[in-house]
Image 1 (tube, rainbow, N blue to C red):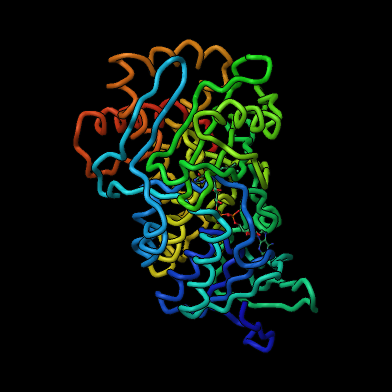
Image 2: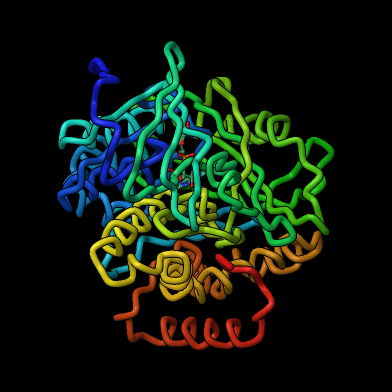
Length: 422
Ligand SMILES: Cc1cc2nc3c(=O)[nH]c(=O)nc-3n(C[C@H](O)[C@H](O)[C@H](O)COP(=O)(O)OP(=O)(O)OC[C@H]3O[C@@H](n4cnc5c(N)ncnc54)[C@H](O)[C@@H]3O)c2cc1C
C-alpha cells in the first residue's frame, strides 16, 4: 500500500465507504466522471471476503467496462454451470446474451485488491485500515464523516456525495437508518479452498442434492468453483427466513460435502474455512438520503437464486455514479430506490419467490428428480440456469425471456407488500 497522507484536503466530491467490489468500482467510475474521490476501507487492501469467488458473464461484462476483464479472464475462464443431484447431471453453458458467454472465478483477496489498486492508480485517494463512522446528517444530507485509522488519530472529512458500500452488516448504513428485512429470504453459507488436480476444469459445479452426515437432505446446495490456480473454491449454503430458519451448521456440512466430493475431484483438505450471511433481493429499506446511496451488499444486491452479488455491486456502482450527473441527484432519496426497483425489481421479486419455495423442506426432494434426470431435465435446466443467473436482458425477445418478464409483472402486481428497497 502506498503511504497515506492525512494532510489531504478534508473536502471530497465523493467519499466511498468500503473497498469491496462495489466500493472500488464506484471509486473507479467516480474518478472517470471527474470527481475527487476518497475511498475508505477498514481492512487491508485485498482483505479476505467469504465468497464463492464465482463471476458470471454479467460480472465479466461489467468488468469489461472498467477495463479489468482481461486480468481476470487471462487467469481462468469457465463456460457455464454443471448441476448435479437426484441421480442426474445437467450441463448449462452460459447462454448467448449481451453479457457474453465467458465466466470466471478469482480468489477475492486477489480480485478485491486488484480493483482497489486500480481505483488508486486512476486517482482515488485510497485509505486502507481506516474505518468511517459517525456520519453527521443535516436535513437528510451527510455533512461530515469521521475516519478512524487503525494506528492514528481520527479526522473529519466533508463530502459532497457519499456512496456507502460497507457490506452485509453495513455499519454506516445502520447509522443512517438502513434496515435489513430478514422475514425475506437470506443466505447462510461457508466456503473453503481445497487443492484439486481438476482446478482448471472450465465449468462451475453445483450440487443441489446436499445431504448431511445422517443422510438427510439439507435445505441448501454445495458448489465447487475451479480457480485455475491448483485449488477450487468449495462451499455450501442454505436459504433461510425468520419464519423457517435453516438449522444448518454450514462449516460442519462443508467438511462432509468435501468428503463426498473428494474421490471424484481428488480433493485435499478444506483450508481457510469461513462462513457468512448473504442479504438478498433488495430486502433492505432506507437505501438513500439527500446526498448518499447504499450499493452492493449494503443494499442487499444479491440474487436470491444463486447467491451472486459481485455483478450487482459492480452494476450499482456504475449506476450510482451515473445518477450523480443527472437531475435525479437532487432527489436521491426517492430516485435511487426507484432505479433499483426498475432495473432489478421484477427479477429479484421472482427470484425471491422461487427461493422462498426452496426453504420448504419437501420442495427440492419433490422437484429435484424431475428437473435433473432425463429429457425433461436436459431441456429445462439450461433455461433454469439462465434464469438463476439472471442472464436475461430487456433486449432479449425469445420465449423464455418473454415468459420471465410476464411472470415478473405478475409478481410485482401481486406482492406489493414486499419491502424492496422501500
Ligand atoms: C459464502 C458466500 C459465497 C458467495 N459466493 C458468491 C459468488 O460466487 N459470486 C458472487 O458474485 N457473489 C458471491 N457472494 C456474494 C458476494 O460475496 C457479495 O455480494 C459481495 O462481496 C458484495 O460486495 P460489496 O462490495 O458490496 O461488499 P464487501 O465485499 O463485503 O465489501 C465491503 C467492504 O466494506 C468494508 N467496510 C465495512 N465497514 C466499513 C467502514 N465503517 N469503514 C470502511 N470500510 C468498511 C469492509 O471491510 C469490506 O471490505 C457470496 C457470499 C457468501 C457469503
